[in-house]
Image 1 (tube, one colour):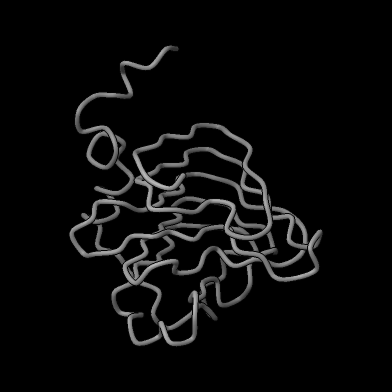
Image 2 (cartoon, one colour; image 1 turned 120 degrees about the horizontal axis):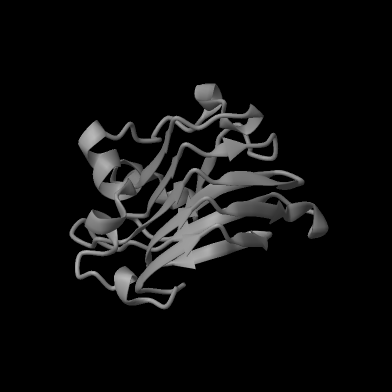
Length: 165
């Protein structure tokens, strides 16, 4: 998903490294996200979101999903300096690294305050945020509501209603 607006509902998505990537404006709702990092013998990454500036409306939102798999994986890494990823109401099995999130390169730490990685009301053994990276964002109620609302975030012009059922 390099760019564009996307809505994934009740899908199965699996991979090992950056298997959900790009600069899309996407909501994943009720999806099963499966990390297969043990198949490649290294720690995996679910997302690599590529938001490049503060005025871009892009980002990945995982709403009421289920994260499982084998091996260990990060929720995501910052593909660009303004990356934005939110997991909300998601169940996470114990495949998530304690840090949860990562940078693309160590030098990117100087931009950590620009990156928006956040988790809200997630549960399960992988959702323990007590050892998450220090720069994980705590979003306001308004920010979470905007990003998780299908109409405000990805469907401003009503394109979803025009899709075949």
